Length: 265
Ligand SMILES: [Zn+2]
Image (cartoon, rainbow, N blue to C red; front, side, top):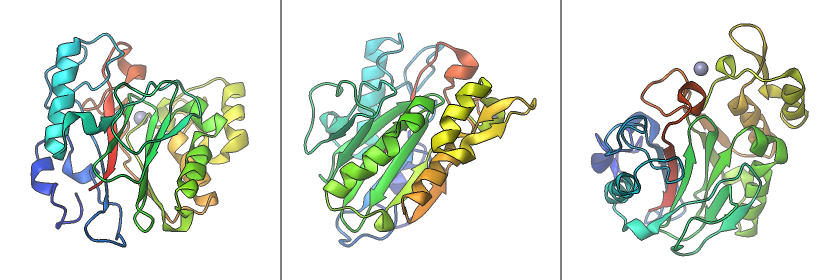
């Protein structure tokens, strides 16, 4: 946590949320309830190879007991009961769910979660796609978004901002954290696919390190968020393909998932 007053700081150190990338999301109207967010990495879990070790994805072929144990550890580190973690069945779509209490199972066909309920931890699973964590500390609204190529193209982020507005949030009071993801230099796509994404987010169109058409989804998302009036976009610049502390489907094929998490706490 960047904010030294954040009560989760000491618990987060050495735990699944790693200091430099877990940030407090700005000043809040009420000091009692503030947006918080962070990103996990591969360290500190129970899963065996190729999911080693802190895999939080229950849909990737890992031992369900190991995943449950890892999720329990995440909840413990965040200081919430396990049932306060909210998960999605992500489908690379634009489904947004507003939640106001624990849910019994991962929300089907959902790629974004929004809440204004304190202590409810919104979780997005990724391996190369972008976890987008949004926070409006004034209205007291947070959101977790799964934004891969299809999500960016289809508009999952504008859909999420609209849902946040429905809860009284304003883009001008909102900050975004773009978490670890495949970088543009490592994300080669066919030219037509690049053009499809560039139509909605021109800044996403880049060249890879070998000079072929590539996609920098975070650059495109930053552009979309800024255009929508979001006050601040914070980057976690780590590349999942290059950083072996992170899960990367593009690098490893069968692998685990890290989580981006945000909550009002
Ligand atoms: Zn890279």
